Amino acid sequence: MKKYICETCGYVYDPAEGDPDNGIAVGTAFEDIPEDWVCPICGVGKDDFTLVED
Image (cartoon, rainbow, N blue to C red):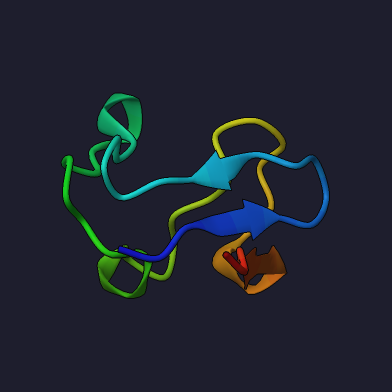
């Protein structure tokens, strides 16, 4: 699955880890995260994340 990085703080959303502290289950693709989800580190929205290139 694709990883996405927060352009503001560098947090990497990894679907293999999810974001269980914020209700995002392990295995949830970034595209399937609700639009109102925010970065757990700095609080910016999904629009500030970009795909991590392998």
